[in-house]
Each structure stands twice: as C-alpha cells, then as structure tokens.
Image 1 (tube, rainbow, N blue to C red):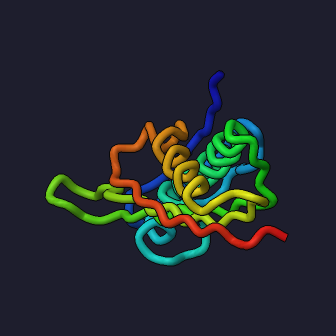
Image 2: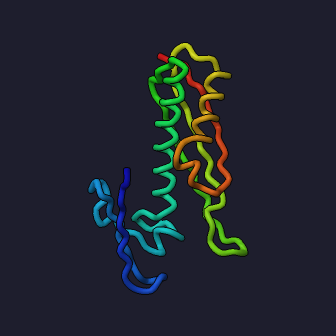
Length: 143
C-alpha cells in the first residue's frame, strides 16, 4: 500500500509560500509558509500534519489492541503535541507527546494502560519517528 502527498513551494524560505495536497483530496492546495510553521499565521505546517497523522494512527492502533483483548471502545480521543526546536544539528522534531482519553466499558485501568503503551510502541507512525514519544492515558467512565 502506498499513499502520496504533494508539496509545492515558491519563493525564498522566509517570504515564499507553499501548498500541500493529498492523494485523497482531503487536503487540496492547503497553504503553508514560514509564518505558519514558525509563527502562528493561518495555515498548516509539516509538524501539525505529523501530529495529526500520529494521533490518528495511535487511536486506530489502540482500538485494534483493545480488540485483541475483547474490548470495544466507546470513544478514543488522542492528541499529539509535536515539539519543534532548534538544536545544534538544526531544526528538529525532538519529541511528541500523546494524550489519550478513552471510554471503554468494563476494562481495568491496568489493562487500558497496557493497551495504550502497546499502541504507542507499535503504531506505524510511532515506529517511523526517531523523536522521543511520551504518553499520558486517562480512562474515563464508560457511559
């Protein structure tokens, strides 16, 4: 299986601009720039997209892990906070913190923590990244 995304950049790094599109069309010429990446201008940036990919991948991996344990989640809400910082080697994504809150009927917190830890270690995006990946997992009362 392969998926594609395309970026087009015009101009110099600080005053240029780019757009990102995905094969599915979900992103279509979505703007990004120096200002969206290093300041807070409107538009996306690679770090935000990596965060979205990691949160989505982790949530699905957690659901799959829970399924192997015969649990079905009511909800899983995952957030990935991506840290971009300037190190001696240059700008680096140095860490990603995953926050997850889930409602899963009849599961113990210990079983949930184990499933979340396994999902963090084994989702394909986690395995791709070199950055330090941390996790906070909260089991909410199932309705």
